[in-house]
Amino acid sequence: MFNLVLFGPPGSGKGTQAAKLVENYNFVHLSTGDVLREEMRKGTPVGLEAKTLIDRGELVPDEVVIEIIRSRIKGLNNVEGFIFDGFPRTTRQAEELDKMLEEEGMAIDLMITFDVDEDVIISRILERGKDSGRADDQNPEIIKNRIKIYHDQTVVVAHHYRKQNKYASVNNMGTIDETFSKLSKHIYKN
Image (cartoon, rainbow, N blue to C red; front, side, top):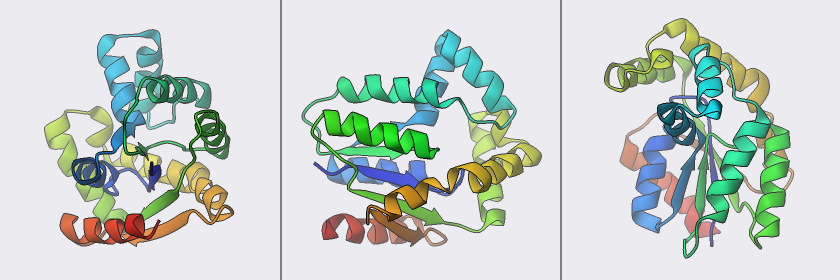
């Protein structure tokens, strides 16, 4: 089993690359964004709370995200590994994820950070917003706030995995296939 954290600011290509990894490696993609949007569509209390925060470009509290991920991990068997996308976002979440996986006899094998210029991220998200209809993908100020939150609060999670020698960085300014090739080399190494 190979467990991977895809890491980077919103719009850096995590979801796109996760889809290719699922297709090629039979991983299960656990995207907190997708899970939270599902909860919002269902109108659950967690979903309504998350919608309010997300529409302002803020993060959903650790406790909420941790419990959602815990329930998803426990319900899956016979998989080649997990891709964590959008989680962990805090050092506490990384520590909790490590504990959860250890209880299941697993661990994170690698965190890969996507490096992308901010102007490219903004244009990618605005383009995505045309199709998604998501309010947080259509407002440049909210997008900039999400990127700022990533740099101010989330980027420290990389240090957690660096200390464990489970960290790599991939430039995601090229094509989807170029980035996938770079990712695959890291997965084959482990």
